[in-house]
Length: 153
Image (cartoon, rainbow, N blue to C red; front, top):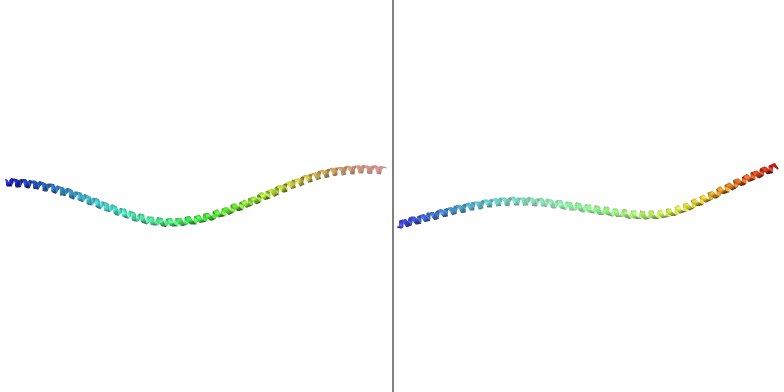
């Protein structure tokens, strides 16, 4: 009876040992899989860190470039401000010149009116002279005729 119980206990123990061995194998496989995943994650982390270092280096370069660009923009802005001041001066000068031209134009209109008046007066004088010339010619003719009659007498 003890032998049967012993065999039964041995069988149960063997079955339990077999189950435990299988569980251990499953846990070892799981542990191996977890270690592989951990190694892959570590490799991925190293790649990410290398990429981050590269990005930091690139950011440093870009910051330097940005500083240079900002300096260039500042210089260009100063040049632009100077050019705008120059344009403002030119506009002011042009406004003054335009005002002077307007005044000159007004003066020229007055001179033109005076010239037109003088031209009319000259024309009137010319017409008057033509009339007087015609009268003188008529008087000369009459004088000539009278002189001829006196000579005939």
